[in-house]
Length: 468
Ligand SMILES: Cc1ncc(COP(=O)(O)O)c(C=O)c1O
Image (cartoon, rainbow, N blue to C red; front, side):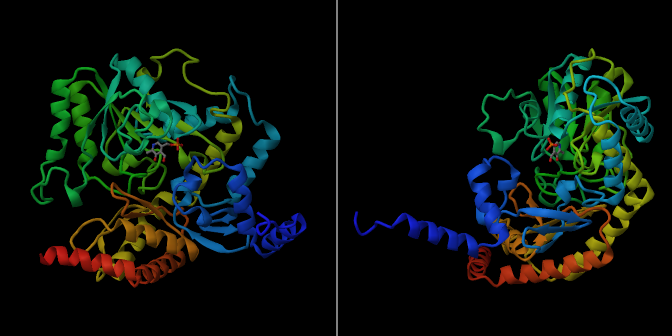
C-alpha cells in the first residue's frame, strides 16, 4: 500500500502536466469520454482515440480543434450536397432566424413555399407534401400512409437496405445489426437487392433476367398482407451498390400489377446525388411516395419530406403525423435555400460531370490494383469495392484504409454487406482539383496499407487458397 501512495499534489501536478501536453483535439476527446454516451454514429466507425472531432467546415473541407484540415468525402452521408457552411444557406437561415423560427402546430409562409416548390419539381403528378424531422420519421410516416391507404400492414423491403433506426422504421426492414432490438415488429418480407457484381442468385450479367426479383412474386403469392414495396434507388448506408437501370421500372410494374404502393426512399440518394433532382428520375420511374431528408435542408436543420399522390396523402386525418419541430420555419427556409443552391449552381449536372470525372480517374489510376474489385457509380455516388486475391471481401484492409486516411486528413465512409466498400459521397460542389487531390491521396494511402505486414500476410494466405 505504502509504495503505491502518491501525494495528492503530485497527482494533480502529473495530471496538469498531462493536460498541458495534450493537443486541443485530445483534450476535447477526453471531455467527450466523460460526458457523451457512446451510442450513435459519432462513435461508431473509428477507435475511440481516433474519433474525429471537428470545429469548422467550409465547402468540402473540415477542420479539427488543432486546425488540421480534412478533405471530406462523406458530406454528412449526403446531407451536405451544397457543402459545409454555404454562404447562401447561412444568410437564409440568419434572415429566417430574425423573422420566425417556430410555429409548431400552425403554418408558416416558408412551409407553404417549400411544399409548392417540391410538389412542382416532383415527378409524382398531383402530389402533396408532408414535412417531418428526419429520414427515419419520413419512413415511419410512409408506413402509416401505406397501411391506411391499402389496409395492409406489411411491406416488401430489400436485403442490405437501410431505412433508419427508430422503432417504426426498423419494423420495415431486416436491420441485421439492430437485431438486439428484438421486440421491434417485423412488418416486412425481405427480398434480394440486385447486386450484379455478386449476384444473389448466381446469375451472369449478360444473361440476367432479373431472377433476383422472382422472390417478390413468390412472396406476394404466399402472403396477402402486403401494402407496398420500400426501396432505395441505390444502396446507401450498406455500401454504395447500384442496381441495373431497369430495376425501378420492374418494381413499378409489380406494384401496378398487385395494387401495391411504391415507396422510394431517396433520403440519401435524392436531391442531386444521382445527377437528377429526384433519384427515381435517373431510372425514368414515378413512384407513389418519395421520401427525402438529409440535404433537403442542406445539412443546416433537420428536415424530411414525404411526397405522395394526393389520394394517399389524404387518407389519414390531420394530427396523426407530425412533431413539435417538424417543418419548422427555420428548417423550411433552409430547404428553400438548399433548392435555390441546387438550381442556381446546377448541382445535378455537376454531379453527373464530376461523378464521371471522379469515376474515370479512379478507374484509370486503380486499374492495376488487384485489391480493387469494382468501381461503380451513378452521379456523385461512388463505391469502391476492395477484395482479396481469392475474391473474398477485403474487410480488414478497407477498415485499415479508412482509418489511415482519417489519420492523414481524408474522410472516407465504409459500407457494404461485408464492409469492404469505400463510399465516396462528396458535396456536389467538389472541384476537379479536389477530385485530383482525393484520387492521389486515396492511391497513396492504399499503397501504404498494402505494404503493412499483416495485409501482406492476409493476401498471401488468400492467394494460397486459390493455389490449393
Ligand atoms: C435511405 C435512408 N433512409 C432513411 C435513413 C434514416 O435517416 P435519418 O438518419 O435522418 O433518420 C437513412 C440514413 O442514413 C437512409 O440512408
